[in-house]
Amino acid sequence: MAKKTEGKGLNRKTEDRKKTRDIRWDRLDNTAHLFPVIAGEGMTNVYRICVVLSEEIKPSLLQEALNICLPRFDGFNFRLRRGVFWYYFEENRSPVPKVREEVNFPCRYIRGNQNHNYLFRVTYYKCRINLEVFHVLTDGVGGINFLTELTYQYLRLAHPEIAGGREDSFMSGTSMNREDSFLKNYRKSHKRGYKTKKAYLIKGEKLRPGEFGVMHGEMNVSAIKEVAHKYGCSINEYLVAAFTWSVYIECLHGMPANRPIRVAVPVNLRPYFNSITSKNFFVVVSAEFAPKDEDYTFEDVVKIVVESLRKQINKEHLEELFSYNVSNETHTLARLVPLTLKNIAMNIVYTQSALANTTTITNIGNIKVSDEYRPYIKNFRAFLAMSKGQSVKGTVCSYGDRLTFSFSYNLCDVSVQRGFFRRLSEDGIELDIETNGV
Image (cartoon, rainbow, N blue to C red; front, side, top):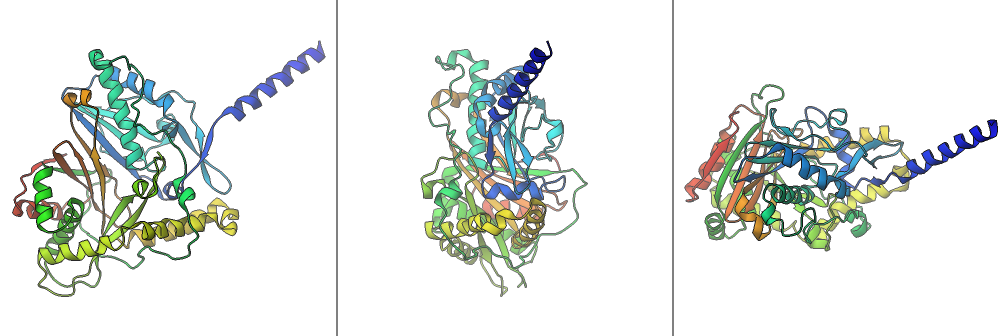
């Protein structure tokens, strides 16, 4: 009897080890290594992408849609674990997180023990579905990937007549690729491309702890494209210039400054390196305007911003930027340094780079959906959480013939936002402004 009991015990141990081995794990991409180090209540590193439908959300169907989608999205089915040398992802076998009605401010810190250890949350408010993602998982492209499929699944449940035999199938363009495109495209490099000198920072009285301001400006794509063309630039360049101009006029009052206004602009690397990864794959360039005189016109600022961006946004320079970062990660000595010491070093480097930019403006791009879902989808919006030294940020996304520029901020004074939209209005762009009342 004793032998049989011992054998059963051994079998159970073997089965337990087999179950443990079956748990998937994955490395963080090069950019993602930073986010767990700097994230906290005051700097959450959470971004939001939301879709506005033409009808009110039915919570039970949204939960069912998430229950169907999540198990098939490997990139969102992870929990974050701390190793000796690096953080890493481990498959999350907890129940699917609960879909909840939005009752708090956006982009709050995602605590694992309050969310079944998942690194994203799904909420809703009236006609809007909100996806909030801890940036360690993926960038905006990966977030749109997930939100679009979640929305499709929800609409198929709410309107079975549009399912077309695809009750739970994903669209062909939805990427599940999980390659680390940083490592794949890395070339040996030792040249630092990022700015480290301090920029002009927007300061003022802060909102109360936990409060988060949001301001959306919606406009016609053709109208802003025509205006940008008049200035000889792209829509994105025009919007970055308009923000820079607003800081120059509203904060510096058109006067010279000791520190430059510098706008960080994330660049999606996928088109440059033929990647379809659903991990993070972007670098940041900076548009710089250093006012030395008192008589700059908006046309002057546009020209300076355009020249600053265009000399940086080319494949060779972008490759240099991320290769420098990857070279630090792959260095033999760096790999052997314990995570505690790495965290200290990364915090120092991050602080230098964060204070080197006045703000961040990111462009999610033009979001496309399949024809059968268009009648049910009115718009998409996105915005970023605050980071060290950057109290006002901007996010651009467009859908159909509408473009939305969204400000997120934690300052009481909104003069920069007003100055930005005033600049667009002066150029003849009609705007619909919406805020969350903060």
